[in-house]
Structure formats: C-alpha cells, structure tokens
Length: 286
Image (cartoon, rainbow, N blue to C red; front, side, top):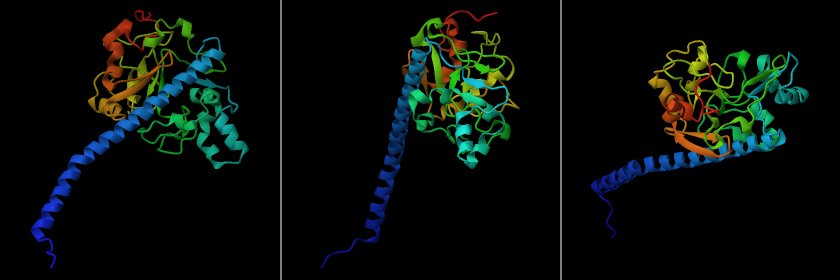
C-alpha cells in the first residue's frame, strides 16, 4: 500500500517552495528590468540615428525642439485625426494643435511611434496624450513624454522667431555632448551651478527652467510650484525610478550610452566646461 504524505511533510515542501520563490522572484524582477534597460538603450540608439539622418539632409543642422505657427493648426497628428473625424483630435486642441514637435519632425527617418515610448516610462504616450492627466491647455504638449532634448542645444521656434538647433559642426565634442535623454517632458536641463544659472547658445535658464532637471527619468515637475532647485531627494529618486538608477542618453555623434542618473543630474555642476550638457566646452556665457 502506497504511503501518503504526512501533514508535516507537506508543510515542509510548501515551505521549501516558498523559500525558493522568495529567492527567485527578485532575480526574475532584475532580469526583467535588465531587459527593459537594454530595450530602452536600443530605442535611444535609433533616435540618435534619426537625428543623424535628419542632419544629413539639412547641412548638419539639428531641428528645433518645437515649431509653432501664428495660430493656424499645423500639428501633423492633429490634422490627420481631424481629417478622419477621429475624436482623439480633441485631445490635441489648445496649444498642441499649432505646434510640431521634434519627434514628429523625425518621423520620416524613424517611422515607428513605439520608439518614443520608453519601456518603463510612467503613462508613456506619443503624439496623442491618451494616458495620464494634464492641464487641458497642455494636453499632448511635447509630442511624447518619454524623452527630452538638451535645451542648450535645441531651441523652440515660432512663426515670429524662427530658429533651429545647433549645427553639429558648432558642437565642440560630438562624442561628449548630450542631445537627448530619458525624461517626462520634451526639453530638459541638469541642475545649475551653485553660483547661478549657466547660459549657453543664447539660452539663459532662469526662473522655472532651473527646476527642469526634475523632469529627467520618471521625474515629475510641477510648473506652478517648482520648489528647491538644488536639493530635492524625493525628486531625485523619481528620476532614478526609470531604470533603477540609470538614464540612457543620446550623444551628438548619434551614439547612445547608459549612465548613472545622479551623474546626469549633477554633470554640469560637477564638470563645468567638460560637461556633456555643455555643447561648446567653454565657460558659461555672460
């Protein structure tokens, strides 16, 4: 006659399974995060290639981070949805319908909207803000919410003030200049030096711009209450949440690299002339 398991034996087996699960689940979680880190780095590499291809067609000049009309609708996603009678066009009303954002400018070179959705980005969207909440006046603003460009390299362009990004030939060290990084807003900056805002390329990050580092990674920036620009551990931990303390960056030579998130935040403060946020490798402009 076959002997059945005793209650104690069953409890021992269950305990062993529970211990193994407790050991293996963190390993599985780490493996999953590592896979997402790799996927995110590959996505930024493709975006870097998109910038490079665009520059090849424009005599090495990068695009503006935003083009804005004098009032008429020009956002390509808005126009497409409106023509099709798609109700999602309503999500691009107000400011976004008169803007074209850098991800839309690169669309002919990338041709894949999913590239703009980082694997671990909170409420990732592209072209149409169909996730998360926002001020209705800024709904779908920025074109996507997974990546931000370096505001020292890229500027916003309007009908009254047409501009473009820097020429790649004007960038002192293309392999050591950041173009784009993980973020929740479409243009970002690092923390500013203790001595005060650092001006490059005619851009002076005064006022709320000094808090734009809080949008790096999975960070969230409150435009109406920016808080302390220099010391904010809670904001830093949000930035780090994107890939467990790592941020992916795209450099001006179109290469991509994974870096420590805090080093990205502090790089201009720590490195000054040699910072990868600094396109000219010079002292701050007066």
